[in-house]
Image 1: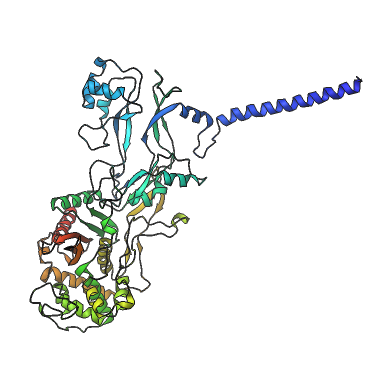
Image 2 (image 1 turned 60 degrees about the vertical axis):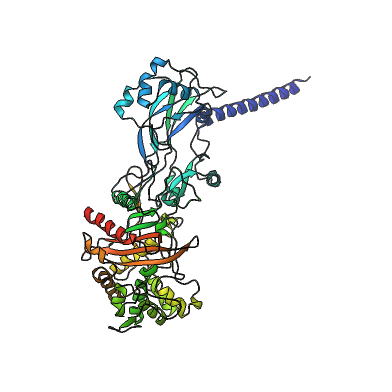
Length: 594
C-alpha cells in the first residue's frame, strides 16, 4: 500500500473519530443541560419530573385565587393546622399513640385500623363535623403532638366552610376533566392536572381564568417502584412561589349583612325565593340571598338549590304597576286628578280586583297605593304595547343589567354575575291586543322580572331615571396587594333613553303613599321611614294555584341608603304576605348597621 493511500485512510479515520466525539459531547451536553432546563409550560425540569414520578402526595392548597367581601373578609379560604396521616410500612407502638388519639378525638384501635388501611394520605376529619370538614388544631396543640413517622401537622386550606348558605353568587368548584383538556390545547396555558378543580358556577365560574393561579402547595413522600413508602425519607412540601399570583377578588358584598339576612330567612321559614340589597348611590350588590340554600361541598347540578334565584326572572305581579305608572306619566295618557272607579270586576278578560266589592273611586296615586287591578288594567289598555315595552327598557327590565365589560383588560368579555336572565315583557309584541295589555299591566301574562332587576328599578328612580349596572366585583388585586384592575361603577343606559326626573320623583312619592295609606302600612313599624310597592303574582305549579309574593322599596326616605327587593315564591293562596314582613325586617337589619 502506498504511503499516500495510508495518509488518506488515516485522515478519514481521524475525521470520522472527530465527528463521533462531537456527537458524543453534544448528547452529553443535552442530557446535563436539559436536566435543569424547564421542558414543560409548567416550568418543571426533567430532574424535578423524575422526582415527582417517585413521589405520592396530597394537595394542601390548590393555589387558587381568593374572593373577599367589601371589608376584606376572605370568603373562599380557611387555613388551619390539620393532622395528615401518610401510609407507612410499620405503625408506631400503641403506647406512642395515646396523645395522638386523644388530640384526634378517636381511640387507639380506631386510629390503628385507619392507618393500616391507608393507600394514600388521609386528612383527619373533624369529629362530628360536616362531611369533608378537616380537624383544626391550634398552634399550641399542634406542637405538643408526638413526632411520629407518617404523621404531619400541616397548614391545610379548605375552600369553603361547612354548612349551607344562600350566596349562590359565589358558586363552587369541582373537577372538570373536559374543561382541563380544552385548556391544555392552549400552549400558553400551564399543564394543569386533570384533577384540578375549576369554577362551576357563580364568581368561581365567571372569574375562573383569573382565579386558577400558577400552582399550589403539595406535601409529598417518596415511594419505591411498587408505590410502597420508603422508610425514613419523611415528607417534603413543594410550593410554587410568585409575588403576583394567586389573584385576589374583592366583591361589593358585606358578608356580615349577608349572613344576618340568611339567618332571618331561616327564622321566618322562607324556603323559596330571594332577597337583593343594593347600595342606593352606586347600585352595588350589598347582599344577595337565594333560597333554598345550597352546600358548596355537595352540589347536585340538577337540583334547584344551586340556582341563584336573585337573578332568575319570575312573574312580578303588582310590582310591575310601577312600570305602567311610569309609562302613563311619560306618555300622558291620563290627566292630573282623573278619577277611576273600581267595582271589584273589570268586566272583561276575566279580570277582577283583589279587593272584594272594589275600591270605589280612585286617583292614579290611590290606585297605585292600594294596588287596584281595575285602575291599571284600564291604563294598560290605553297604552300601546310599544310604549309599555319601551318604558320597561328605560327602567332596566327585559334586558340584562349586571356590570359588563365587553373587552376586559383588552381581552374577552367579562360578566361577573353568573346565570343572569333578561326577563321579558311581551312574548310577541305584534300580538299584544287589549286583553294582553290589561293582563300585562297587573304584572301577569308574559311578564318576567328578576329580584335584581326589581331592586335596580328602585335605584333607577332614586337616580332620577338613570339605570345603573349593579356590581358584584369592585377590584382585582395581585397577591402582594397591588391593583390589577378596578371595575368602576357604571350605568346601563337603554337605547330607548330614560324616564324624566319628574316622573321618577313622582313614582318615589307614590311608593311612599303605599306605606302611609296603602298595602304597605305594616312598614310603619320599621326603624326607618320606608317607601315601596307590594306585589302578588298568580302562578301554577304541579297543577296547583300558588302565589309569588313581592315587596320592593327603599329607605330611609329622606336620605336613601339601600334599595331592596324581596321575592317569596310558591306561597298558598290567601296566606300571610311573608315578602312584606321580610322586607321590613331586612330594612331593620340595615338600619341597625347604620
